[in-house]
Length: 84
Image 1: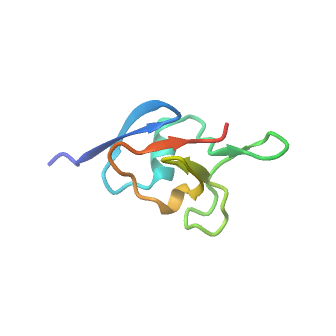
Image 2: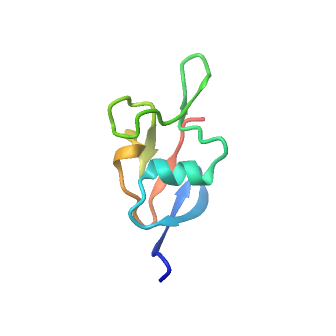
Image 3: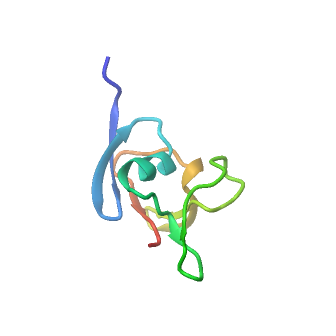
């Protein structure tokens, strides 16, 4: 049986991921390297803990900033913007 797929946009690019995935997993699957945001010095930042404690995976989801990508499940049509 084929897993259900969800279609969403990451940085204005349409991607498909398995339903039930986190936004962080979708970003990691769609980008190489997976850059979630940049530090104040311009260094790329990625997910670190994967459980919402470190805040390294913050992205903008459907217009709301500072969302922890590792804690948010994907939804059909979701718009995700990484701060690159």
